[in-house]
Length: 414
Image (cartoon, rainbow, N blue to C red; front, side, top):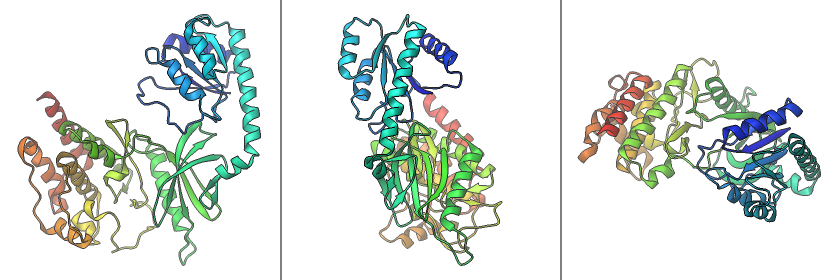
């Protein structure tokens, strides 16, 4: 038994938990955090749940609006509505909107609640059983040319020459995820480099389990392709945030979070090597999660899945040493962070040109750009990140994170 609770009142949640787990001790009750500002993504159908319980008083009385949205989605799990009064206008509207049942939020009798939940579960499991053997379900398991069981493909998000990204719903996890798919590519020794890249990314995320690093849920192989199931971020990435405009205080705070994630990554013996706004995902407007470790290098692995001397990364965000195929360490990631911070503060990249090789040349030979006006006070941090020589940058991601946190605190106090 797995239930999703969209219930803000702690007393109401506790009562539901006691009653439900007394009947089903192993029941999994997933609570939607009331701090979450956005509605559930439109593609989410709660197909991994037996039922969804929505309280009328969710977020100050918005429960009915949430019910109308969720119950109106074709294929959504049975929605049970907790109303202040089962004879009131909200209860009548809930029934019209498609609530599976309406229950009183204050004095739900245990037997009544359990019988309704049990019936909702039977209906949902029967519906899912029919759906799983349907032609629609077979088509939904297709991610391009690849068939991946236990996931419902919602849509393709993006793709390039190496991998494709899809939005999917996992029945097992009961959530939306991003599925990254890439063809298996074996080198002369028979090593599957695609799988090795995904394995490194999966291992990094699982080993660190850091709030500012993306969560990876599953790694697998299907139809001669490797796939990786990862956390979904409906708020997009830092590119979108920059386009919307970032205040200097928020820029410093976001950069401090990135530095904290790099500190954890470096502490685990790995380098990112492709840090850029597109690989910084947003949890809301002010929290980040570092992603895409496909070019990461783990200094403890005997197998290096990139060739020495080759240039990997994005020219706008490359350190001078990375752009010239030279050995890199954690301070190379700090340089990339400096480019991101400069872009957040000014809205522009520090070095630009039509030719990528010209950008690489500028990173090494042109002076560090100067901040102007009221943001000039943070020039020392930019200098400590964008120094041409690694020895002249912050000595570690931890040192950079502390400097950025101090600067953000000073900016807030000003």
